[in-house]
Image 1 (cartoon, rainbow, N blue to C red):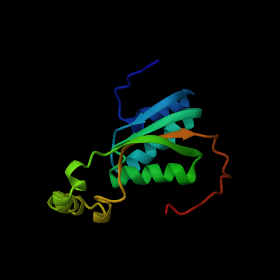
Image 2 (tube, rainbow, N blue to C red; image 1 turned 180 degrees about the vertical axis):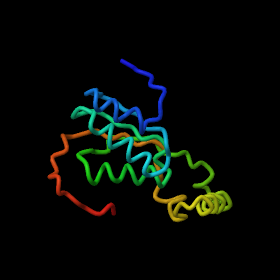
Image 3 (cartoon, rainbow, N blue to C red; image 1 turned 120 degrees about the vertical axis):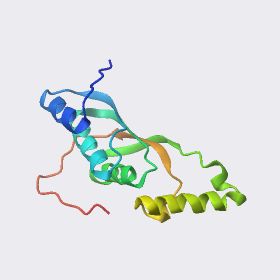
Length: 144
């Protein structure tokens, strides 16, 4: 029911695909750069059965959120849940200083500052695969 693989996902997942492994549930919580989350999703998508669940952790990070958006827009997935980030004092009137600091931290790391507090971020996003990928090999669509 559970297999622990002690290897970087960008090396282990392609091997698992080549072995024909299949899963009902996958949890993505590794490289938090966009390309890392997207590569993990790319290989996991090939191993998930229809009806299978993929959970993206730290989906409140703009880089991971972009990978989630890609999955929802360009693959056959639907959002079925998630856990919201506990913003706590960010939502209170005196939370302006915390919001200001969060935006400054986003700017420092190169993330879009407008994503620091809005839209209300999800810490985890749960997606369900609705059908196999049936796009033609010539498919192209912009990320946004």
